[in-house]
Length: 520
Image 1 (spheres, helix red, strand yellow):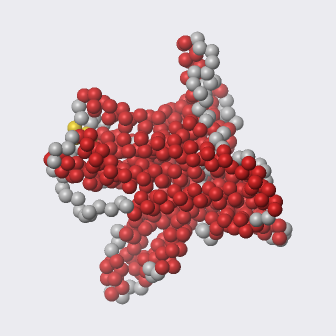
Image 2 (spheres, helix red, strand yellow):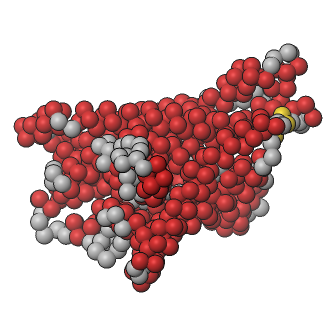
Image 3 (spheres, helix red, strand yellow):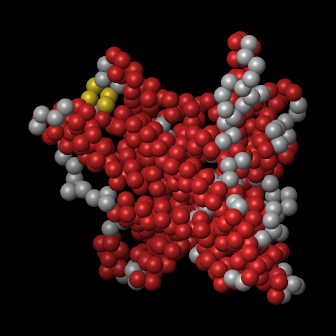
């Protein structure tokens, strides 16, 4: 059930006929080259951005000591709470030709034309996505550097290596697999993005699939475009797994830090530069967008009445969908991982890995994989009602959420089980406990914190999901993400600020928990 939407996309090629060949030839001659060039160019720009911001900030807070370092170490996680499309709404309103900044500068300087190019471009999308996705690289790079870099840099210093040589010959090569893994995650999120690219008018695969299905009304073209995007995502996923496999160290127990292996204390302008380099991503990726949206909300409340009554319905729909999906995802993850724990066969291991592949698949591809068989069934049996159950009820939407986000719950539950030694199970069984008793009296009390984290993470991810909700939601089931997108698209930013800021507040919960765990 969790893998079938991905497999159904690939079966679109089984329906190859003369009409499909004509459609594909038309795509090759018109939009497909643009989709490919734009998607790859956007990925290249985002890769430069996330590696530059994430690696530099991780090295600064790990290898050096300067005023505010401890606070900046967790403040750098805050952009994770900002959906990328909310950042796009904020900066478009602030930086566009009719925005407050250009109006004020033209008033001060007397300039008549535009002061800079429109942010609604591929470059603007790359900047927005870089500011939103760099924490993937920052988190993994910081973990890799904090575990080994101080001791090895101390050894290099004793051998006569200078500071810059220690950074570029010891620290950064040590973090290279972690940087590659974080970069792969950022690339998958870039390929899956719909909100930023659609709002900026950037023609990528995600927006092209959406248009092929809903504008061209061509399900085969949408499925075949989805399969091409799947190939690109599979290549990125293979790269991410390869980078993860290289995350190996000589021994597991790190030696105690000596005074010489502590972060290097910076003074003067060096300390100010490190502080600025770490503070800029926080300001640009979180603080300024929140202030801009807050100002838009205040202006909207002054000029017109905000839709508070409708906001209650949007919030309840988001909360309800997130809660149902999170409970089902946590239950499925517990079932799969517990089965793998008690009966570790190759089939259970393979099925668990396949169930988690949906996180690497863009939401718009999952939607196509769900609706494609429905259209076939409707053609063969018009009175079957399959379309009704997937599009007029919450079934299709929750199914898409589970396919997309069960990997988050699986990772949390697997990490919790990894901390429970197998000897605990064996001891309980030797004392006469049945398998159900072992789970209820040994596993569950130790797994409750990780299951709670899984519930929270899936809940927030579902609330922020845009393309699947936009297509599959039933009537009168608008969510915060959908309304933020529609209101911003209609240039009603004052009203869009209300659901956008609510999504930011919801996203802060897992980020604060993550920061607390890192401090421990």
